[in-house]
Length: 123
Image (cartoon, rainbow, N blue to C red; front, side, top):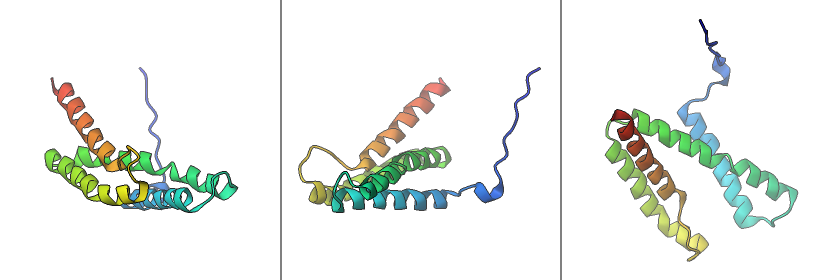
């Protein structure tokens, strides 16, 4: 008989959803400050951009958690899509017409992928 060991994370090391959001926001701000305000190739630029890479996986995790705990998944998707639409204008003003869009659309597509996967697992 095979036993699985449960790993218990000490209470001091556990992070709430709010703590993860703060970490992701700080990471994103550091990344954007480096990208828009600093000269590429400097050690500080590289450090802030490296720290900034934490933001997307944390936000994606939080979206997946939100999807799992949402009572109305369509409403959850529409809120993310609306946030993407609202933030598209500032994105465009910062980046111009460079054929990219803000990450909210990617996170919205992640919700669609989770919904499809969830539907496939039911059948």
